[in-house]
Length: 344
Ligand code: HEM
Ligand code: HEM
Image (tube, rainbow, N blue to C red; front, side, top):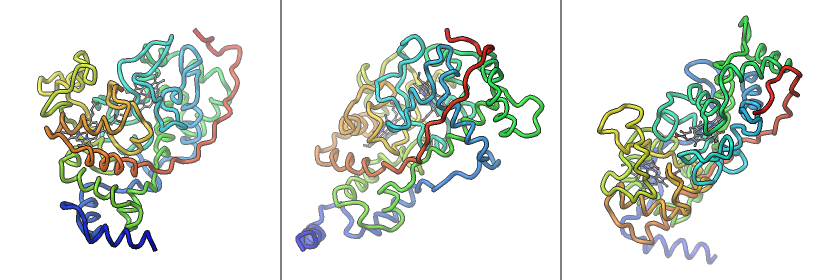
C-alpha cells in the first residue's frame, strides 16, 4: 500500500523534464539504443561454430600464449570481474605497467572497432595484438604456433574447428577461435533492456530520470547503440580538456592511428554496458568513482556543470546497464609436452 501511494505521489509531482509516461521515454530511448541480443549467430556473415567457440574458450584462458606462461587474456579481462582487471592500467609481462586501462571484453562484439582508439577493425584483428605486445604477453606468432603444435590435443581441436585445412594450427586461426568465443561474451537481460522491452517497473523513478537526463543533456549523442557507446570517435575534452592526470598528454588517441591533426586526443566513445563493474574509468583509469566519471564527462564533453542530483540519477541509470553474463566453465587445458617452448 505504501509503495502504491508513493508511486502515485511521485507521478502527481513529477519533476519538470520527467515525462509522466514511461512509454514516451521508452520510445525516445528505442530510437537511440538497442537491447543486447540473446546471442550472436554470425561474424562477418559466417556462422559461429560450437567447435571454434570451445577452442576459443581454451585459448582465452591459455597462459602459454604468453612468453612467461603466466598471463592469459583472462588475466586482464577477468570474466569474473566484469571482463576487465579493475586496475588503472594493465600489468603485463615482467610486471610492466601498460599505458592504458583494460576495457571489458563483454559485448565487445558490438563495438564498431576495437581498442580505445579503434585501431583494430574487429575482434579477429584485435586478438593478435596483446599476444605480441611487449608490455602484455610478449610472445610471437611463431612461438604461439610452435607451442600449440607441440600439444596434440590442440592440434586435434584446431583440425575440428577448421575442417578441410591442411595446416589448421595458425596464428590467424587462433585469433578466429578467440573471436568466436568472444561473441558468446554478451550480457543480455540488463534492467535497462527489460525497460526497453516494455517492463515499466524495471527502472525506478530515479533511474528513469537518469535516463532522461542522459538523453536530454547530450550524453546519448555519443553514447548510443546497443553498447551505449563504442560506435564512433570524439575528442576527449570537446568543450574543456580534462587535466593531464585524466588525459595524459603523451596519449593522443586516434592521432596515432590516422596521423591527422583533427584526431589528436580523439577516442572511441566508451561502451557503457556493465560500466558499474569496470572501475577505474577512462583510458587512463584515473577516475575510481562512476559519479566522478559522469561529472568529468559533463564538464569535458558538454560544458555543463551537472547538479549533484543529476549526476546521481545518471549514475543510477548507468547501474541498470549491468546485464547477465554467460556461465563460462573454466577449461581444463591440455598438458605441455617435451617440445613445448619453455617459459621465459
Ligand atoms: C583491449 C581482448 C589480452 C589489456 C582489448 C579489447 C579486446 C581484448 C576485445 C578491446 C575492447 C574494446 O575496445 O572495448 C583480449 C584478448 C586477449 C587479451 C582476446 C588475449 C589474446 C590482454 C592482456 C592484457 C590486456 C594479457 C594485459 C596485459 C588490454 C588493454 C586494452 C585491451 C590495456 C586497451 C588497449 C588500447 O586501447 O590500446 N583486449 N585481450 N589484454 N586489452 Fe586485451
Ligand atoms: C567515456 C559517461 C557524454 C565521449 C565515458 C565514460 C563514462 C561516460 C562513464 C568512461 C567509461 C569507461 O571508462 O569505461 C558519459 C556521460 C555523459 C557523456 C554520463 C553525459 C554527461 C559524452 C559525450 C561525448 C562522450 C557528449 C562525445 C562528445 C566519450 C569518450 C569517452 C567517454 C570519447 C572515452 C574517454 C577516454 O578516452 O577515456 N563517458 N559520457 N561522452 N565518453 Fe562519455
